[in-house]
Image (cartoon, rainbow, N blue to C red; front, side, top):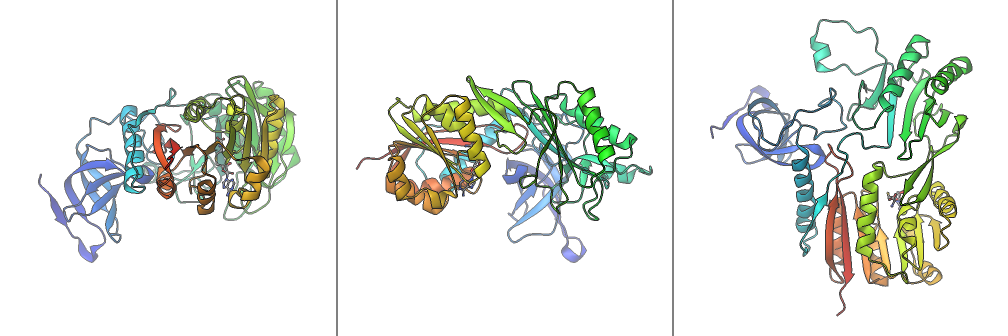
Amino acid sequence: MNYFCSMPRKNKFHIFENIEVIDTAAKGKSVAKSPDGRVVFLSNAVPGDIVDIRTGRKRKSYYEGKAIKFHHLSDKRVDPVCEHFGVCGGCKWQHMNYTDQLAYKQKEVTNNLIRIGHLDLPEITPIAGSSKTYFYRNKMEFSFSDSRWLTEDELKSDKTFDDKNACGFHIPGMWDKILDIKKCHLQEDPSNTLRNSIKEFALNHGISFFNPKQQKGMLRTLMLRISSTGEIMVVIQFFEEDKEKREALLNFIRDQFKEVTSLQYIINQKGNDSIYDQEVVLFSGRDHIFEEMEGLQFKINAKSFYQTNSSQAYELYKIARDFADLSGNEIVYDLYTGTGTIAQFVASKAKKVIGVEAVPEAILDARSNAELNKIENTVFYDGDMAKVFTQDFIIENGKPDVIITDPPRDGMHKKVVEQILNILPEKVVYISCNSATQARDLSLMKDHYAIERSQAVDMFPQTHHVENVVLLKLIHK
Ligand code: SAH
């Protein structure tokens, strides 16, 4: 291949010509090699493309760049369905066909387990793809802004843009810039209709959009939850209060969208828009909706956590339950239990399940859901895992036969891993949304545990994110 490397004045960027894109990388990027042998991370290419690249400034040992000319388009490519693709940070892999997305996810997990964890792997069970590859999210959060992001095409056009109001997503890395979204392919209707109608009503009735720099304006965020049972929750967060205008908007939603079963609002005048320390006020309907899984009911309020891809969460939980292979006599710990969904999902197959979670409100939800589901063999505790999960805690609750653990992206605290190694339960089922930290944690356990099974699960089609479930069995020496 004819490589060419030019070094423009001031050495600010490079142009590399005719380079083949060879792999995917973290954060939805793809990888090529520069003629000088360095890795180049690309934001807009698919493995198999042959491209000219313009780099940004060189980092220590790699470049970041963009394909500026495509000589050959990869056969892994598909046309992105979304008009916002490439600007919106949401679905970075929409330009790659779903089969290849799955193959790269699987590969990333396996590579991490081998390269970071230096682990011996069994035959890997193929990744579980999502039956829905679009419109799979049950929850979306949009932001309002009066200083909309103008796309490159808009800037290049000679039009003037008077309406700067937007409702959509943050431009990656820019806290004050919102991309106006006309149609998002992640949540089924009436999600788009609701968002667009709320925006239009606000514009027509002089309801101002938030300006984060000056901290002014009324409309701040919109959260939409559409559950698998068909219930719909709308939560609007306002910054400035104007009772008349607020009620006009809320009345409009209530009257025009009869399918909305829960309409709530928040008036939040803090600097940031996190709702967790805010009062959520019920305007009409109920203050919660329900999700359902295998006959279990999960009550969800505005602040509750629930896995965002409901049908794929069911697949994930089934894999975890299958790996745990419970007989009914086991004491099971569900670490990082959230609202206790996994604990309740496996409860009928266990003697007792103990759930632990940092967020006290989630634990209140877990307890009330267990009561709702008439489950009597679960107990839930709140607190920081590294502090709660102690020897005294084990003495009080019983030695676990099986630990199911589902930590956040950072993985488990070292003390938590050490405590598992003190207890040495027969089985550990480790669910992870970051196989790099999972590999790190598993490497600390490999003298005592063998990996019996490993299966990746795709909860987020069109993105690079992937979950992985590993079954560890105690090695008896
Ligand atoms: N298993 C749950 C949620 C997993 S998400 C489900 O399937 O729905 C990870 C959870 O870990 C979150 O609920 C988060 O609040 C909790 N968490 C994060 N850090 C924690 C810590 N240090 N101690 C206890 N829980 C923590």
